[in-house]
Image 1 (cartoon, rainbow, N blue to C red):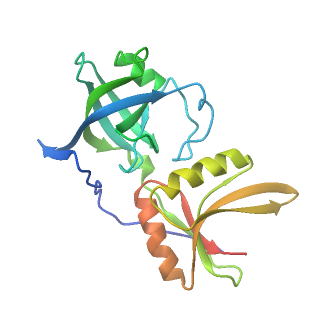
Image 2: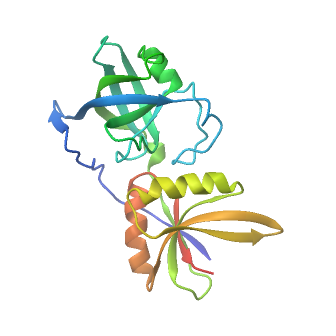
Length: 213
């Protein structure tokens, strides 16, 4: 039986070594890069399909749905973006912008730019609920996604593995169709699994506590 339990959290931004509080915003300064056609049309960490022309970005730690003002410190151009993906996983870079956002900042040709990012809010549609499925008798696990294309499952597994241990892909056949489920851990009790699910949901992931069947 599936149940949906509310997640009650405050909007807490994870601290970073180069972030400071300024005028009520959390700010960070560093190198931005951008990503485009190679990922266009593929799922992001939030589950949304990546649109290289939309005003979006990837950040390693900020909750999905965080709205940022990004300033190119080399030409003072600004853009507002929504974090809907994870990255960049390249040392020395703090944010990956969509092609559209990078174009507005005038950094497409160069590829990177020194920027300042400021948190200005969060899109509430990224506030998640936790689903619970108690059917079965195996250990509890936390499921973050299920994909028909194994490449999408592998990408989400890679993204999650930067912050969580015990991430794996479970293959399942449902009504003759193969799915690749991205899951975390094996927990003896639902409460143990729920604690991990709360953390993931607060970051903006769609999660389900279920049994390892």
